[in-house]
Amino acid sequence: MLIKAFTCIMMVSLCLPLTLRANDVLGLGVHLGAHHNVGYVNEQDTSVLTDPQNSMLLGLALKVNAAFFFIRTGFDTTFPLNQGEVLENSGQVEKYKLNYVAVPFFLGLRFPVKDRGEFYMGGGMAYFLGSGKVTLTSGATEDISAVNYGYGFITGVQFIVLPDVRFYMEWEYFDARSEAVLKTQTANAWDNFYIDYTGHRIILGVMYYLL
Image 1: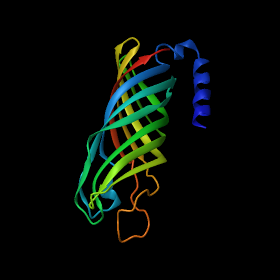
Image 2: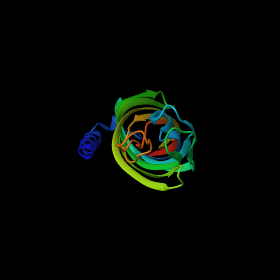
Image 3: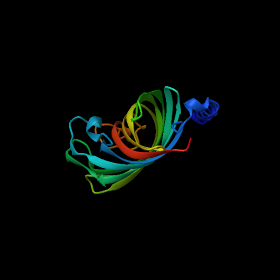
């Protein structure tokens, strides 16, 4: 469904008058970012105290503009900067390291700022493919993986560097959790540990406008 919607918007944007398509219709960007408290483990069990995992994001962005509207998609992959560690624990988790690939899709409004750039904001959803390792207090290591959808928001700004090149900064927030994939609380007889993709992401990048 996302592919169909994206295809329709692309066709519409290409049919717009040239005055709306001059140098800011279709942009392709590359960016780096950061995600703090990956896995949100302290929210799964409020009795635990964690030294949270932090990850770097590397991704590509595709942005389509049509007058005062935009579509923003692409993909991001993460690289852990440090593994998370549980300092005080009522369960069995000792350490964890989580990775994910995210494919976001946002719709929203954009507000050009004279000849300096633009401000934009919107909402949407994302597809997450996550995996990782959890080290238990027993010393055993468990591999986990999960796929899930989430919903979120985006706010960004772009600054004109060259006629076809923009520097962009974005803030994203997603709320997304997988099904339970591992039993880590002995008081329960069922799986209770899940991969939580929820959190804030800060992104910095450079975008080149093809059209």
